[in-house]
Length: 66
Image 1 (cartoon, rainbow, N blue to C red):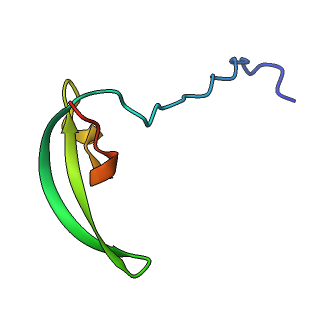
Image 2 (cartoon, rainbow, N blue to C red):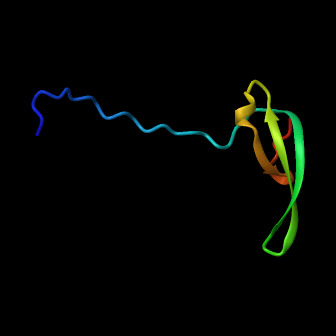
């Protein structure tokens, strides 16, 4: 359609791995939320060798040992 326009290759899809095998550095905060009529506690977790923008809110049973 535009013959003078450069054609760039389509970038490959970026896949993020959600199940980080990284050990936990520390738990920063805790909060209680209501989900499906039940109170649940979530923890803001920082992983070793990860920046603060990679912190995640996880349920207690989802926090990896380490």
